[in-house]
Image (cartoon, rainbow, N blue to C red; front, side, top):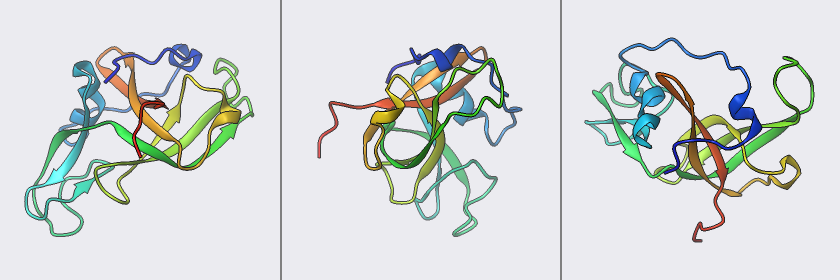
Length: 146
């Protein structure tokens, strides 16, 4: 998996999350090029965003690496300058990961023309290195197999 996102958005300021024991693997796994998603030891279900116990069975969750591959579930192209330091336009998307139906990550799509984004488009993870935090973003995946 790529460890850096080449898009101009990668240089833009971001509000970074506070790290805790529950979310740390998700936000720091990119240092190793891994997208870390919690999985229940009881029922085997992947869970995102990070929580303290499985919402289905109450089981213990452990973060594990996933493929980083998925498809665009939905998206919007932002053209409004909420922060003048963030280059426009940019894509905000929900990506459904291939590991499980309904396993979705809110993210930015980078390194692509916003007008080319489509629902169902195959994507793969990349990471913006923000020091201790590696923000998962997604890029088009032209090598994805059907």
